Amino acid sequence: MIEDMQEKYDITTYKIGEVARRASVNKETVRYYEKRELIPKPDRRRSGYRIFTQRHIDQIKFIKRSQELGFTLSEIQELLELRMDEDTTCSEIKSEAQEKYQDVVEKIEDLQRIKNTLVNLIDSCAGEGPKGDCPILVALEGETDTGQNLR
Image 1 (cartoon, one colour):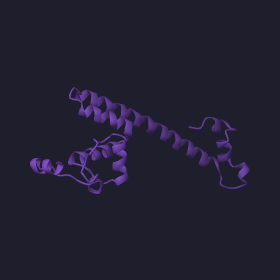
Image 2 (spheres, rainbow, N blue to C red):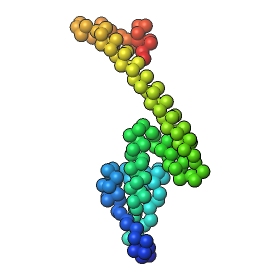
Image 3 (spheres, rainbow, N blue to C red):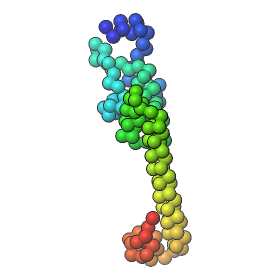
């Protein structure tokens, strides 16, 4: 039946390995996205094999690109739901992107504070003497003003 529909509508289908290859992920990733309901549940052949379409591949690529921009899978789920909702406006999508941008800005600021603290700790240590006198360890133990104000 599915094969008949495939011929009638000329829908190309793929097995999981081919989907993974075309989307540049591994099979476990495809299975995980399916389990998390990030991609539509694929139909099955009579043999039990799942059959995927180009839509699955495109959606997996969308997920991977979104992850590369720092979106979590939960946030990606929201984006996918907005994408599928006919009433969604571009401003709603923009709002999601702006929220992610603000998260990234905050992470960069946090990383900059961490970097500066590490530079200060490294500069405070001569790299000589017993480890009990190491200002880095003393600061990490929280026994100095520097240690209590890390980050």
